[in-house]
Length: 545
Image 1 (tube, rainbow, N blue to C red):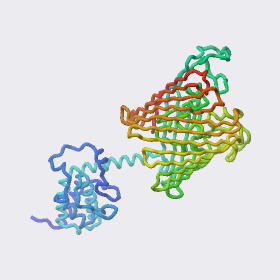
Image 2 (spheres, rainbow, N blue to C red; image 1 turned 135 degrees about the vertical axis):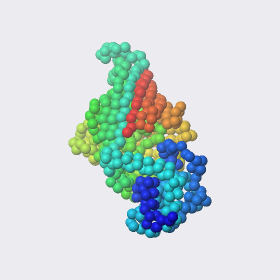
Image 3 (cartoon, rainbow, N blue to C red; image 1 turned 60 degrees about the vertical axis):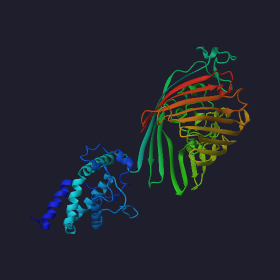
Image 4 (cartoon, helix red, strand yellow; image 1 turned 180 degrees about the vertical axis):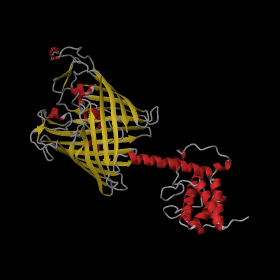
């Protein structure tokens, strides 16, 4: 018994609604690009297959392949790749094939819904039915994935922070303690003799007493919230809100050696005592290809120059401030107002960066204490006072030339100059990194400066640091490093040269949590040979979200 054509269409519609997969979003469906290997690997576990041939690819010579191709050619079910090719001469995985089949079924269903069912032949209906039966399990799996994706998309749309702004954050919890060799055993400060033996007390570069006793173990924290807004995809407006514990004095190194960069870098940067402040406020855009411009009322010079893959981020690698950046190169290392340029000529290993930074630019008053300066500046200029504002007497300009022929090696030549409290300064620097393998690298920095009219006269301080970094040490994703350096080599200050050491091991707990134990050792602190060796230990935990 044969059915008339209307009955064939009715039956076919029933089959479509019985087997039909939820339509895919209105976008071009490709072949292997639609389901890359990484995506397939994440698919939910399938039910047990009923035959071995379900595990094989669909070959161009298979009936199913040729049948679907005939539907595509007659009814233009899919649009193919972006270059208008179908690439029907190669084998497809069953999930690639199912993806295309689903697109074609949706197209045929649209034809019926628009009363164009007469375009379908009896042969088409037979092919559709057979293909749906043969790939029923894969179509069901695809439907589940699409339903899950739609549910997640709906949830994201309902709970998204903003359509233009991305919110991210970081929390650092740390416990820190330290001691110095031969402390004064609790003697009151007034009882310490001026000629105390080595280790009886800690003194500053000028001989003033800093401490007689070991500092107590303390907890410290930093919280950062970043709001990154893009108005047309390639620009960024950054607003960073942050707070911290007790600033440079919430850690033992900051208490015992506060002058030459021994303080934990993540302690000294944010507002302290639980006060919330704006840590970054700037806008970045690309006026032309390969050229980036940033400007803002709250920038940090360290965000743009003197970077290093192995010693740069206080929440990831080293914590000693003098190891994070060239200590004498950036006397303005706090919040400042200015602009940065970054030019990377296409297809070359060269890069040029330039930064202008004015300290305390939001304050229009003259002759007052300047904020945002490195810890050694109040030592060099004891009055620590100058004209503030965008074009006051405390500013610096920086130029950095980078040569990086590949990811393994980079060399950066640097110059900075300007005024520090109306006194001229100039510094030259070198920064390098070399990966000896995927798991081992060496790195270092050097600086030579000229600071005029200081409390100690005209000075020519030098700086150096060098270290070794390890990747995937004992565990994939782990980072370890050890470094040594002398942050302020200057014979006119003190009677020795301070030397810093640090070792750390950054252990990933998961993608969002990392725990890092680190040790600091400081000899001849504050360039004084009477100061006993300082040792500190920190357990740092970083949460990123």
